[in-house]
Length: 292
Image (cartoon, rainbow, N blue to C red; front, side, top):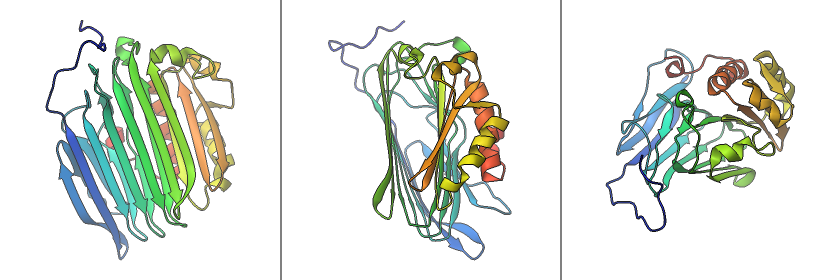
């Protein structure tokens, strides 16, 4: 087993992955089309053909995972009236690092009347992983953004604990240039032990967040709570409930947006519940890659 990195043990110099995607879509008649697309490093974008509905774009990391100082960035522009679904081919794995922190950044702009559903599959943090993530969105006054992200702490098939790791997650969403949503999470050191604390996650090993920033988001709070309960989540219970293997959830709506947070000791159960909620909330099936 490799020794834990220390201040006296510098990580060896390596050539690291630098993946970048830049995508711009516009509305043309009744459909959404690609205006501009650029790919760099191991990042690729696939565009499955859809006879109806929004344009679908699937992010692919040909490096097979993220580790040791890799950098990945995605920049998306959704033009006026355009409709885009952005997802990933599979769960993103964050491997053990011997020191350097990896960076993943997503920046989106949604113009007047545009719609973006940001639906990546879950991120899996390995023991020793070090990741800093950032999601930033700039929205027009009548734009629609639905964003979902889930993370699993440790490989459950190996019953893996994260004895040492770094995970920082920052969300910033602006409407008409004004900050309307800000959230930051930072976990350092023995992450599994931190999550076991009742005040943090009550023993959860996976968490998910759903954010809807759209003109009608606040009015859908009772709808999403009903969907959570119908999908098997326990709504509004103390964090200690997440130890039982089910899903504990809470939903709030304010300031023109709606936020759902879910915790579970079982990532598979969390995935199943959140899939049902997403389908019900969006009124359409999830991207096909979620089902393969």
